[in-house]
Structures are given as C-alpha cells and as structure tokens.
Image 1 (cartoon, rainbow, N blue to C red):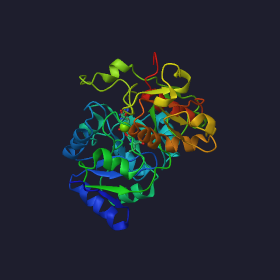
Image 2 (image 1 turned 45 degrees about the vertical axis):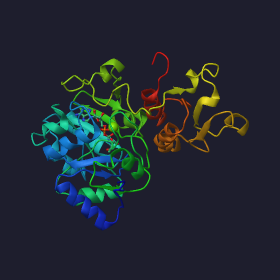
Image 3 (image 1 turned 90 degrees about the horizontal axis):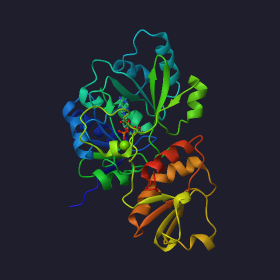
Image 4 (image 1 turned 30 degrees about the horizontal axis):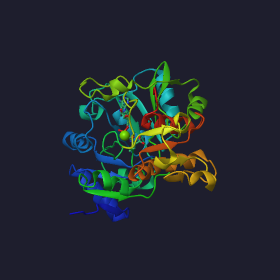
Length: 342
Ligand code: TXA
Ligand code: MG
C-alpha cells in the first residue's frame, strides 16, 4: 500500500529524523543543492544500506556532511604542508554552502564511505533544516543524492518519495532546493586545486579565491558504464553518463526537426518561446521567464522529470554559455544527452 514518508520539517520531525539516523536507518533530507539519502557516516551497516537502496556501485564514494568547518577537521588529514592549510582555509570561506571539498582522509573515516579511496569528500550545507539535523546528531551524515543510481537528482520531497519512498524511514520536507544542481566538488592538493564537478559555485568564483583551478574532464562513457570495476574510480563524480531521464534527450543544436518532428518532442527552453513556436511541440515548458540561469538551474531537474512523464519520444533542451552557473547546467545536460557523437 502507498504510504507517504514525507514530514514537514518541524522541530519534532527533525528530532525524530536524528533518532532514526542514530538507529542506523535511512532518511531523505533537504539541502540547498538537491535532496540527500542520509545515514550515520560512522555506521558501516547504515552506509552499506545507502548503496543497496540506490543500486549504487560500491566503488563510488559518498560525501560526508558536517555542521561546521571545525567539525570537518576531525574527518580530514591536511598534513604539515602550509600550502594545504591555506587552501583549506580559503575553501572554508565558501561554507556553509554548495561546495564539497576532497582532501586526504582521517583514520576515523570508514572505508564504506570513501570506497577505499585515501581521500574523503566533505561539505557543510547551508539549508537550515539540514543544519538543524546535523546539530542534533553526534555523528556526521553520509548522503548521496536521493535518487536511484543514474537517474535525475531530486529537488523536492516528492521526488524522493517517488524514487526511494520504500527505502527510507522518513523524508524531511524542506521545500524546493534553492540551487537545484548538486554541489561543486573540488580536490585540494598542496600543488593545486582541481574542479571535479561544476555546480552553483562557479569556476570563476573558485579562481578568484585560489588563483588557477584545473578542470578534470569526465571519464569515457564506456568506462562509466562498466560497473564491474572494483577499484576506486579514477575521478569519481565524473561519470560521463549520469543524471539521465529515461526518455532520450538532445540539445537544440543537435536536433534535426526533419528526423524528430516537434509533434514527438517535449521541448524545454531557457526563455519563453512565442506561442506560434511553442504550440508545435507535443509538450513544452520554459525553465525561466527571463532567461535567468540561476532559475534555469533551480528548475532543470524537476522539468526533466516532468518531461520524462509525458508520452513524448524525445526531450529537446536549450544550451547556454559555459560560464558561471552555465558550466554546471551544460555539464548536467551533456551527461543526460544522447547527442550524436557525445
Ligand atoms: O549536492 C550534493 O553534493 C548532494 C547533496 C546531498 O550533498 N550530494 C551528492 O552526492 O550529489 P552524490 O553521491 O550523488 O555525488 C557525490 C559525488 C560522487 O560522484 C562521488 O563520486 C564524488 O562525489 N566523491 C565522493 N567522494 C569522493 C572522493 N573521495 N574523491 C573524489 N570524488 C568523490
Ligand atoms: Mg548523485
């Protein structure tokens, strides 16, 4: 029988969620980026259940969420290098916020979280519900995005219920996610900073803080689809094929209306189309009224899910410049796309 696990995030619901986590259960939690599938990061069985619930390969490590940069220090091992300490200090200036930082791990971090990697990914989220939850737990929270592996990340509580409602003790409803895309991930090393996954903290913002930042390219699609590999991924978080709706997706520049007529297309734009154009499509939605890319980012995943629920055979979506948040938007679209030669 269908039973909603969604609870409005009152103080008592947050305390109950903290109790569920302490008992080793899984809870759907809001963050400013996307919803997470949370477990006690120090409990190997609970963390194992995250992988089972998502159908996630065991070699893909999880992010550890903590309530402050000071708490994060317990789970990382920065070593004696002054350069590393300085980079950490600069990274902390983005917290609380949508930045995940990969650094060498402390001995107390369990192997299930890092998938055997010598590094750990940590983040201090800014969402008030998640912050309150973290303050009521005496352990850090491991949480990947709360979607089934390879599907689009959830940006509201209903998305979590649809995908994982039967796997969680509760879903804390903290409203629509403000960013709408997963956090920016950087790796810190004494000799440089690498961008592993673009997000709403842009490459330009990172470069103004750290100086030059190198961009790590995604691994090939064939490698990404090979889940037989037991070793940690070369650059986890950089799978080429990811975040895909079930309906094949093309970017507007790679769409040929002679091949795929508009009558079979769910069309997503970044700016409203005139009625004369939009009415040709089987289904149509604009992600922003003004072409504002922050708004496009916030609405992207919900729109992909909605388009996926239509009868349309293809989704065709706009493109934008890869600057600012546009880099993260195009990264997610590239990963979802079945564009020729992509
Ligand atoms: O916004 C977010 O980051 C959300 C919220 C819930 O915090 N979480 C999220 O988690 O997107 P997930 O697991 O869907 O994506 C995290 C990515 C994974 O692709 C993983 O490979 C990468 O972070 N990652 C985790 N630990 C890593 C490590 N030690 N080194 C490199 N990449 C790592
Ligand atoms: Mg994910």
